[in-house]
Amino acid sequence: MSTIHQLRVVGIAEGISFIVLVFIAMPLKYLAGYPLAVTIGGSIHGFLFVIYLIALVRALVEHKWGGKKALEVFVAALYPCGTFILDRKLRLEERNGADN
Image 1 (cartoon, helix red, strand yellow):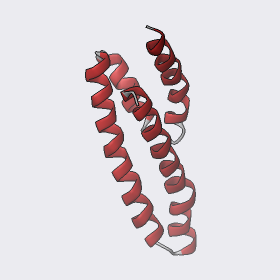
Image 2 (image 1 turned 90 degrees about the vertical axis):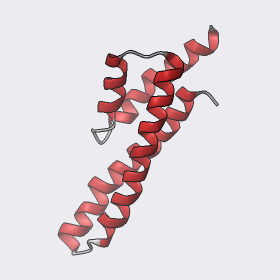
Image 3 (image 1 turned 135 degrees about the vertical axis):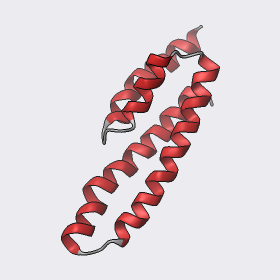
Image 4 (image 1 turned 90 degrees about the horizontal axis):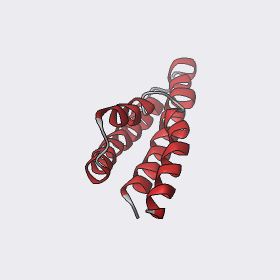
């Protein structure tokens, strides 16, 4: 499995965890008085975010991405749907890399 593919897989998982945290766990905490939802969801999301950063560094090193690309991939994780939008670009890059 290529480092770009690993980044894509972790990015999808991280993106899903972010959406669950923002749109399910936080409303459960603030509207239903269930703070454990954020504790659990936040812990899972935090773990996946760290794994995402590790996958990003591995892809940066292997593919010799510049700072602009690194920033783009990092910033994508800061928005609830950012990693899903980025995934399309990474999929194309992964395919093009396989052709070389």
